[in-house]
Amino acid sequence: MDLQIVSTEMIKPSVPTPHHLRNFNLSFIDQLVLPFYIPLALFYNTKFDLSNISVIHNHLKKLLSEALTSFYPLAGRIQNLVSVDCNDAGVSYTEAIARRTLSDFLKDPDLNELNKFLPLDANVMTDCKGVLMSLQVTILECGGLVMGVCIFHKISDFATTMSFLTTWADLFHGKGDKQVKMHQDLTIGSSLFPPLSSFPDGYESNTTNFFFSEGNHSITRRFVFDASSIATLRAKGTSQNVPNPSRVETLIGFITERLVVGLESRSKKPPPSVLISLVVNIRRRLDPPLLDSAFGNLLWLATAFFAPSESKMELPEYVETMREVVHGVNGENRKTLFEA
Image (tube, rainbow, N blue to C red; front, side):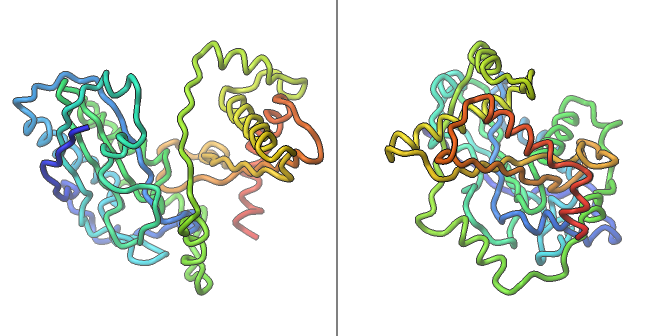
């Protein structure tokens, strides 16, 4: 794919962040999160006039600046493992054009080509001194648009990322006047989960080296399940304890089951153990529940452990285990996890 970077600039909040909000404390969960960027590519079947590309970008940048007044920490810089300096340094905005149509790309997506729509190299270890959010807006030759977003995980989870993008989109569609709150209180995360003032020596380097060390590779695969396939799997995954499994429970259970079968086929014997970790949004699971728009990393890991060498499991048992571990992440457990 022929993609050309046209320009990159920093976009700052339209209204300076007040002095009393300049120091934004990270939460304990923020501190635990690994230092990498969450990648996201959004495809829009727009019909923009290619002769007015500059007008499109200028409008998006203006609204981005307005949205940042509500999400001001994103325009700051992490100054240590404890807080963010909300100095309005800005977020990165890159303009790009690509000689490709949206329909051609989506017909058979290439994951390597997909990375070209991202402004940064995501899912790799990085330091905590750079930009906290970077955007790349690529206009396709058909007039379509691809929004590539990389947001630093130590300050945002996926829910916060989507909350910000929704606010930006609302402004684009003229809905922002009543929905965007300038310089709103974003401290719920650090209030519920206060940060540690310091970590043991070597904690950060040891943790990042464990996940991002040379030779420790991740594999990305794309699986497509249509509605009828999901319905069939849900029917096969039912049990007395889980008579109506969700789509997520069913698909994760199915993928886990096939992973175990694949490992057994390769080694000619069942694997001794399999560990599956799921990221759970805890906003609605706390007591009292939080708004979906609550800022920061409000998540926890639900971990399922299987021992295929000890007992053979079928899809309903995998589904039941997934539901059990996810339901175990709740408001009552917050006291055990964070207040001990």
